[in-house]
Amino acid sequence: MKTMQKGFTLIELMIVVAIIGILAAIAIPAYQDYTIRSQVTEGLNLASAVKAGVAEAYANTGVWPADLDAAGGDNANPPSGKYVAGIEVNDGTIEITYGGQANANISGANNLLALRPVISPNDDVVWLCGNNDGTGASGLTDPSSGGSPTTATTVLPKYLPQSCRAQ
Image 1: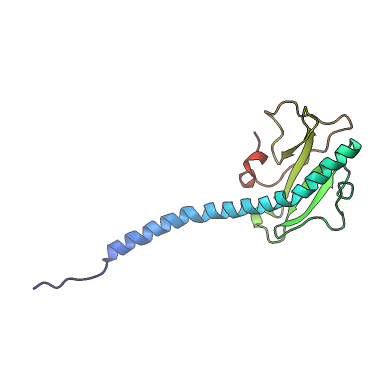
Image 2: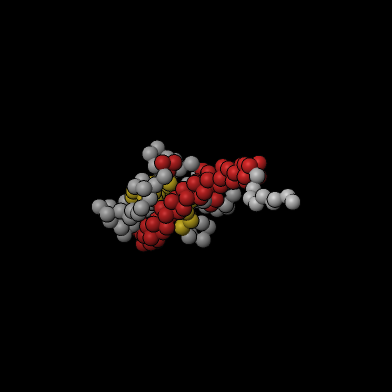
């Protein structure tokens, strides 16, 4: 009578380990990019109130606000979060600086995301995010009182939302 062995052979176990290793090699970098993109999104969420303040200040005065105070905020206490070191306004342009617990890929030299306001043909404020310079959108102009400065975004394009990438 022959005895039956129960369990897996060594080769079967090695195949399973190899498959798991291949899947992990693909999944870990993708997950890291995902978490960095979510950290960048925190800055955009914090900037939403500042965007409303800049647009309201422009609607009231016809010029872009010079700083966060003029946009209804407080220069001494700018909005910040777990991954955002601070948000500033520079003649209408909103500059989001990443720091704190942010991933090393969006801190240091790669830590600035700029949101630049322009005017649509309907006199609405439209925001150009990051590397998006408005190419492809018709009728976007600077107001007659002068445009806001174009600040270079240093966050790597692969971590920016699609609307913030160059068109």
